[in-house]
Image (cartoon, rainbow, N blue to C red; front, side, top):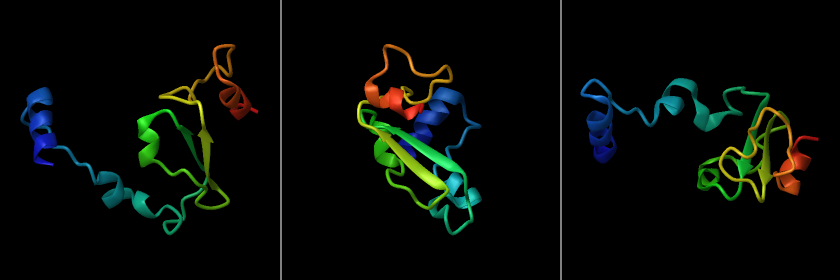
Length: 95
């Protein structure tokens, strides 16, 4: 964590302190079901390394995970709907 803190100080100034556990400490995001969270959809492009830190399986009936085998960073998050450039699994995700 010291390397992260040093990077943040150099990049953003002395007043910036990283808080990598803030979502856990303040929102209980490490126990979504136990904290009665609902209506969450995790979309994961499996060609995106960020998917390794996501939920890849449904956590409950209202906290769902959809994995796109050919998805990459942000390919599953467009607001305009599927396009001809999207892979079949991304297009199916809009249905």
